[in-house]
Length: 476
Image 1: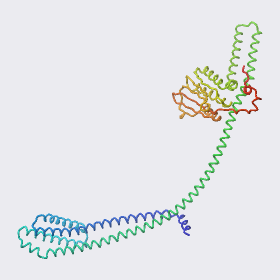
Image 2: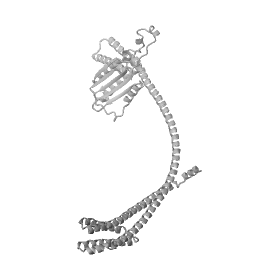
Image 3: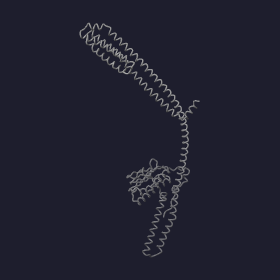
Image 4: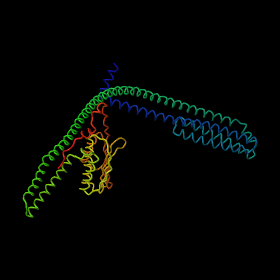
């Protein structure tokens, strides 16, 4: 039943205004209680000071009377300073009482009576001292033996007692007011506490519902994220396979084109060159112009054959399959240096890589040298190949103008190189800065061929490894 009530209250549109009103009411009660308590405490403090002043007045009059009696009986001047001090204290106490009861109609008559009696008592004491100083011994003795002083003191005591009783009544009233204020504040705090507990219960219940909803949403988001991650991984794998297939197809197409150029175009150029040689030998004596034409035609055919060879080497480096990676890189760098007039220094070591990785390294150095020729404006290039910590490292470094990699987007060439390196399980790093050249480094895993089975060693010929290496057709 109580939970149903809470559920209904929670659905009410007035819950928040009621909560705000309750909080405002609690604030008003707290502030009012504080102000009333502070005022009552201040008033009690003043009443306590007034009671102390009444006691101080009574003590001062007694001290003054004691000092006067001591002086009259002994004649010693040492009793006069306490007497004078007591008079001043009595005057100060009366002034403070007058300030405290200035607007108090009930206590003002008692205060006036006490002031008059105190003045009469002090006057009686002063008269006795004056008579003693004048040498009128009989007069001050007669004054001392009368009951005037005792009557004055009794009257002062009676007035002070009544004034103290009045202050006590006021103090009791103030204490009751403070207790009443504290009771109201306590009731308000209890009511606010109960309301806070109710609000806390509702908040916790709502929080639990929100937490359950959040957990469900997180579960749904996690499932969707896992699905998307799986889908991304699947698509990435498909794209990787597609890119690898396209790369392989590209190399296959290059090989096919190189083969066609070597077979078809090479045969045509060779046949044309042979025809020119036959024509030259059968024509006999030729005019100088015909001789120049045949010589020019022969040189053109030689240039075509050289161009065909260079194109075939760019499409499919036959030196790589016939001579190995180190020799192929030496030939590549030497031809690049001859064409570009850029000094190239090589530090190449024999490494163990798969054929596809060797081709990748060759293409990486080829692309890097092409970029140096196009953009670097370099005078020297260092190419290194070796093994470091059981990994193959290839580096191309130039002393050109360099660039800022963070502010320059990578071109397709660099992206292609990075992909080809990563497709072979390697890592590529590019370092460059304006005015300090560029350094391209790739690190690849070594390829350690598996040892052949013992029973197959005898059947293999010593030249089987050489025979297994594919050979390119001889170029013309």
